[in-house]
Image (cartoon, rainbow, N blue to C red; front, side, top):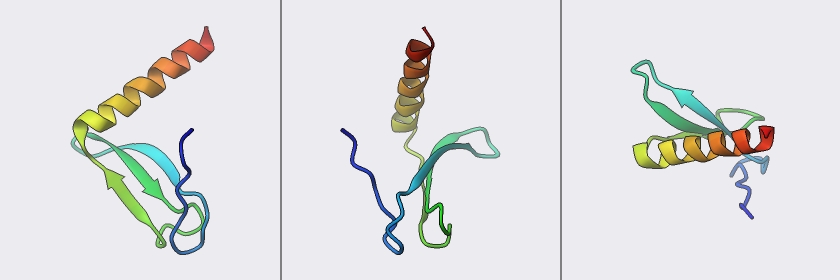
Length: 65
């Protein structure tokens, strides 16, 4: 089971999204849904991001079958 990460300011569960830079590189964005100024960050490690996207794609395909 994956542990939920909470905003260090308000305690709301942080939101994650896959983002794409202007150069076409993918990243995982992490932010507070209540107020983006509380916490906002990006994970840019290419092998990790590619793995997350691949696992999410495979799970979506498996769910659709």
